[in-house]
Length: 359
Image 1 (cartoon, rainbow, N blue to C red):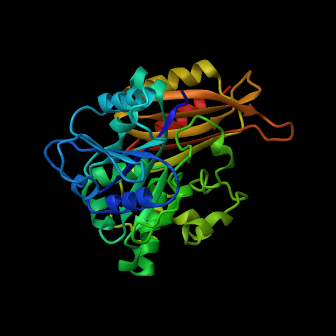
Image 2 (cartoon, rainbow, N blue to C red):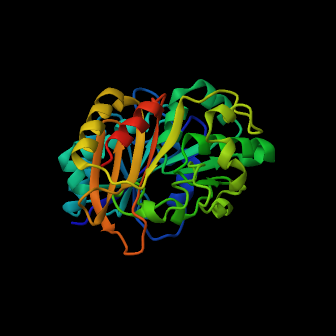
Image 3 (cartoon, helix red, strand yellow):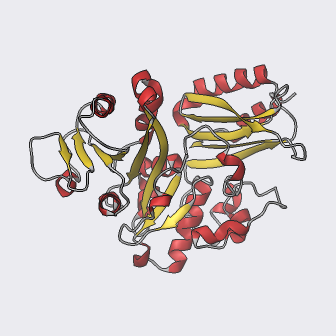
């Protein structure tokens, strides 16, 4: 059986996750979606909106979508759904997990890698984070959960942008870009999200998507010949923020109103020299041991000594993995590009260690 694609939808309380989900579920896309409401503890957030009052754990909706509310183990629920699909008891094409607004998406994402049974049935496609334009500045200042949700995102949707001024929206977009340069940003109105921006993003798939992702290196301000023409996707002018939002020394004094110096930050490592595979493995192993819980996402394309192919590398917290990508093209400049996103990570130690792992 083909792997079942899974999407994690996260965002702070009130960001509009349920509104987006209702739009996605009710759209005539012909896909059968299983929605898991991953509710921790007693706090019943949104299931009464999506699922009518019933003792049933799994509800089949009129358009073939399924909803289930989980208060126990996510792993067991995923296993249960996959088994019912295998037996033909339930028919669905993909799974969306809506986390509670206070959740750290890390453990949810790790479920797909730590458990063999889940890993054999599902492919984690992407983590989508909703950010409430009106309340995000305060939430990002005050709540680490909100900052972590941004750090984990493969795609960021900004809701309620109509409630703030263009200047405030621009400042928020710059701040989010500073925290997570690899996640494209989209403003959404009243939950109206295009299916193509929601599903099959391959945000987690170990493939060469990074190579063609123009946003991946927008954090790197030293690469002045880098094409900054991709701002049209985000509704703001990218060349303006290249300098301001990526140098912490500028960040708080630029025109982008960073009221606080966020603890979730990103930085990029680049080199045209190849890595020594053994040295790199030793260094990354040591770093993940010490800083793993603070490393939200790290991802890149590596140029390894002795390999004619690109190595696609990524990790979440202490979990990391690599995969062989396509061969380097004959006329292509071989180099490594990695982005690290984490909480108060020691940039100097990481960059120095990567440098020392080069041939």
